Length: 360
Image (cartoon, rainbow, N blue to C red; front, side, top):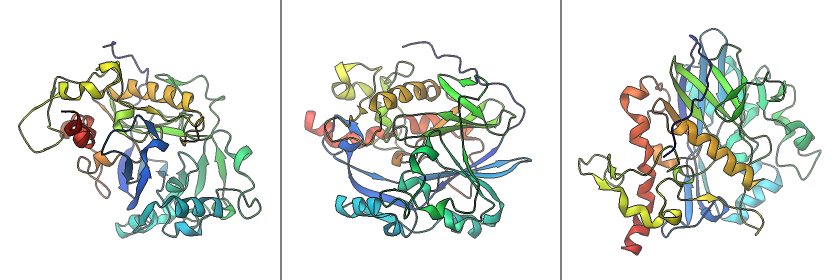
C-alpha cells in the first residue's frame, strides 16, 4: 500500500456542526450498469436512499448541501419525468427537507443557502419550498449549460421556478487562490477554514463535493454522486482489503470475524489495493457519467481522504450507511469515538453475498 498523503488542509480553530438528513427519498430498481462495472450477481440493480446535510456555522448561519428528490417528482420537466417513468424506477419520497427541518424546530427561513452537488433530480429537491432569500449555490459551468430552464427551454431538466427571484451563485475554482485539499481544487466557503467546496467533476456538469470541519482535526466529506457504491472507491492503494473483516459485513453485531480473502476473486486482477468496480463509460450507450475518465480521477482523489480514520466519507446514495450513522435531528458529533468510519468502511461487502455463493 502507498503511504497516506498529506491532504494539506489548512488549520482552523473554527468548526461547523453537521447533521446528516435521510431525505426519505428511495429510488429502486435502477440498473447498476448505468453507474459501474463489472456487475456481480445479486447486484444487478441499485436501491438507493439520498442524503442531505445541514451545516450550521457558529456565526454565519445555516446551509444545506443537497436536498434529495422532491415529493412531486413527476412534475419535473418532461425530459426527467419521462425517464423516470420509462425506466420503471421505483421512487418514493415521504417528506421534503424543509418539512423535516421544521418538524424539529428549525425554521426554513433560516436557511441562508442551498448547495447543489449537481443538477440531477434526486439531489435538487424542491427549491420552491425555500424562501427567496435562500441563495442557490451551484458548480462551475452551471449557468452556461442550464439557463434558461423549463419551460422556456422545453428540453431542460430543470425548472425556472428553482431560480426565479433568488440569488444563483456559481462557484468558480479558478479564483480560489490556488487552494488545494489533497488533489482537489477547493473553495473556502466562509473564509475561515471550517467548510470547503471541492471541484469533483466527471459524474455531471458542475459536480462539486464538500469537506466540513467538525473538530480541529476531524471532517465529514460530502461526496454527492462522485460514486454510487462503496466498491467503486474501496479498496484503494491507501486502504487495502484487510485479511480480517471486523465488524462482519454480513452480521454486523457478530463478534465472528470474516476472512477478507474470500473476496479476492471479485477484485480486478485479485489486487487487494484496487476497487471492485470502475465507472461505467457512456461510449456504449450505458453510463450516466458525463466524463468517465474525470469521474475515475475524482474517485482517486477521494481515496486520499477515505483512508483517514478522522474523515467520514458519505456518498449521497450509500445505502450501506443506513445502519451505521445517526441521522437528523442528531449530530455527527463524536463520530470518531463512535467508530463510524471503521464500522462503515467495509459494510458494503454485504451486497456481494450472492456473488460469493455463486463462486464458492
